[in-house]
Length: 427
Image 1 (spheres, one colour):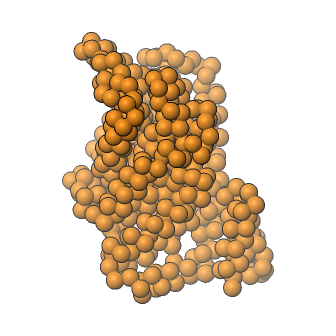
Image 2: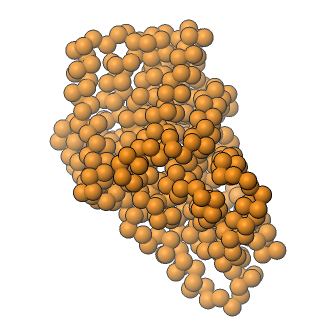
Image 3: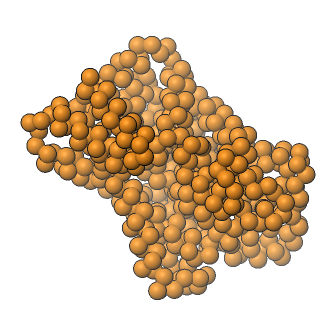
């Protein structure tokens, strides 16, 4: 009865339009007042503080700052120019440019929304001017922006790692194989649609243009190389690597590209603090919600219930995959991770599933919700840039979602493929 009331209040608050963080907080407060009236309310802020009291989580503001610096420092335009010179000559090349640029930008933004705003503001207008329908141009950017939470560094993976006690470096390395495979699948869809609708090809980039744009983009591309080299080399923790990456990105934007000045830094830092505040607010309140679920023994009951009807780890992963797809369509990735990881991880461990593999699949699958209706944030960003409706973008997005969902379902059944690179790196 108490569990039904808790979940019922949460769903009711979501249904009437209350943001996820506050819906979690109000449901938790209502539960405590009704079922734990003798509990001191001082416990609530204590549990909220405990949810943010993790050294691993201090990496988040640094990676958000890297994305802000790269977005404001002219990095996106240089990445798009480089991608366009390399692959723009193919039919449907602008779509491939969008995918290629998103993959590179993903490697230092860690955010699907940052991807959509950073590369989409350049590539979507270029595609529309070249004859792509507005909805299709926005759909390609929406699908490719999902890679922002797949290719490291990834904020959802940092969150999962801090909750599950799993190596964030291992999660980062494990994101490369799904990221590359999903990107290749999207390229195939882009090429098929380009031939079917006879989309134009861009001019072939000359060798001098490729070299010039590559030279201009190298300082930006070195940022993720520096971050991952520090983590994989055991020289830096993810938090330290984020700090070094932020300093490097600031130096590139200020002194190499010179597209921001010292007077822009207060605005960039304010934006970073604002986004970090939203993420940490969700984390702290969701931690309180998770504490209540643990008090109700929900993880233990869920493990006993699920394992009683599941005959194999593969069947369990299929069920969890489809469950996460539905959740990701309605709840943002960070909130869903904090709520569901304490519930689903014990089930996975009891079934013999590797926690590193499980974390990669959960993080990526939930992240796809950012580009799916009805509440995918990326859809609203790309539709706004393309000056079209979310419905128009959603229709054009269907074949890309089919590839993303099908690819992730296949990877959820192939742990050796996902874990190949982390094992090679010693995780």
